[in-house]
Image 1 (tube, rainbow, N blue to C red):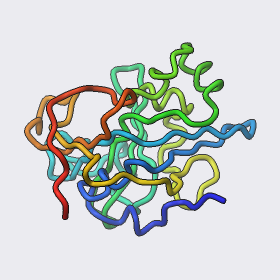
Image 2 (image 1 turned 90 degrees about the vertical axis):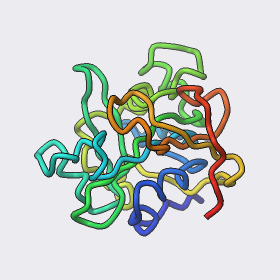
Image 3 (image 1 turned 180 degrees about the vertical axis):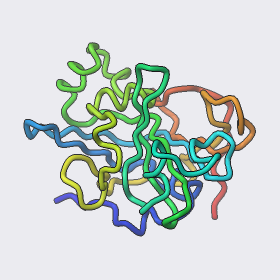
Image 4 (image 1 turned 60 degrees about the horizontal axis):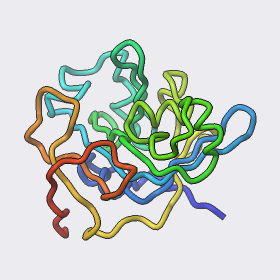
Length: 202
């Protein structure tokens, strides 16, 4: 029996939620009933006051989901070709989210391979655009409820110990590059290898 992460798990700052999502399981039920699962191994936090955040300049139709409630999916389209998915965090009215950057495939890899057009398991979910493509996520899932919905959710997994979590600057952005808001677990499933520090105990 699987247990979904409750709403309260997401109702905190993005920098708190991002490392704590590591080790938990992203699950997606496709329209034909097939379920995909992957262990989250890399995340990035984005806050409303962060210049790299889509919500930095305020509320717009594109980012309305980021303003809450927490525990919903924020999906955006970038570079005219890729979708990326984020978990909305924090209290209602404060725009913050955690980008899901990479995951270790666990279930439904045959379907992921078809979506990704590759048999190389390592590359199925290694990177935010690849992850969204493998899980058949597009703007139609923007606003999906990760707690009560039936299409996509996050299951409680083994988690990750503080000693196994690395942190460092985010990648693929032009501003806010100094903030150490990227979190990951070392291994072949991570999207980018960069110098890192061990996550300090709280």
